[in-house]
Length: 139
Image 1 (tube, rainbow, N blue to C red):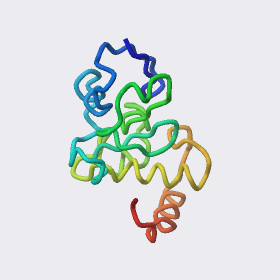
Image 2: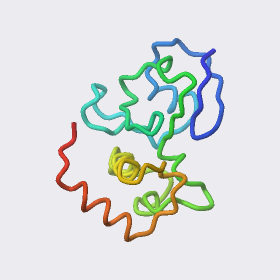
Image 3: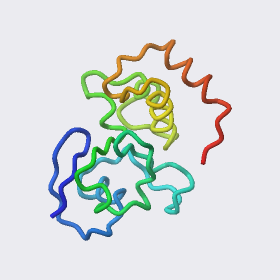
């Protein structure tokens, strides 16, 4: 059994330690907002936050995140109160643009030092964060 903290919820998962985090999220936990894209950590569709750092879940074994905080797009807001980034994509997931919302939340986290799911952010702050990161080339 592997102990995980996914979206502030403790989980016990019985999977092989080398199973990619992406498949645990999607298949074991039903968190399908994190998408499969390329499988080689290039496209960003599988991006989640591990301890506040954007991480490609398709290449990270689930054992590497045991005991760490993992936040998926579903964990950024709540069903009753979506985060402005989720509202921009029309719901808790991010149809048609996988990887963009996690990248934006990472940019806001970097700029403010505050985890986005805890941050009441205004449209002005969101626009400002996007403007400030437009020149950044993805790694």
